[in-house]
Image 1 (cartoon, rainbow, N blue to C red):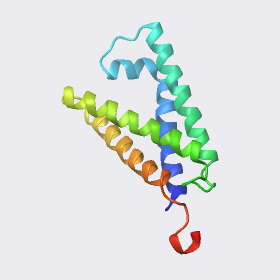
Image 2 (spheres, rainbow, N blue to C red; image 1 turned 90 degrees about the vertical axis):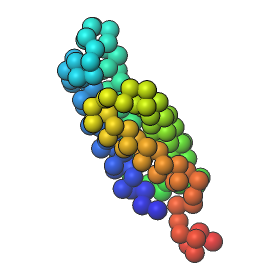
Image 3 (cartoon, one colour; image 1 turned 135 degrees about the horizontal axis):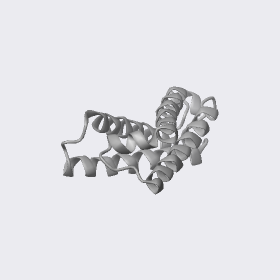
Amino acid sequence: MQTKLMMVLSAAVLAALGIAFTFLPEELALYLGTESNPLEVVVLQLLGALYLGFAMLNWMAKGSRIGGIYNRPICLANFAHFFIGAMAMLKFLFRYPEQPFAVWALCAVYAGLAAWYGLTLFRHPLPAQQAS
């Protein structure tokens, strides 16, 4: 399984979100349809810091063996993040389907990465003939 691609892709997605929430919190709050108050701006910046930290973790682990018992905490944390995020967005989008395309696209990216990390979590990282 190609885990390096998965780690690079997830790092890129998380870094883009992290940079956006860190440096454009007021603009994103307006785009999302809320008034930006100081507390909301700080919370969005903290969210950006979390995304950037997770992106750095994934980027630094991209060359490592991932799957099965290898780097299980990293894989499990990514799976939990993307799965819970996808479920929360799906619930929101089914309740309020008139959201912008960007929210739907982000939900699809989250669902895809959740599935990929879920498969990686329970599979041995080496092909069957090399694993024995």
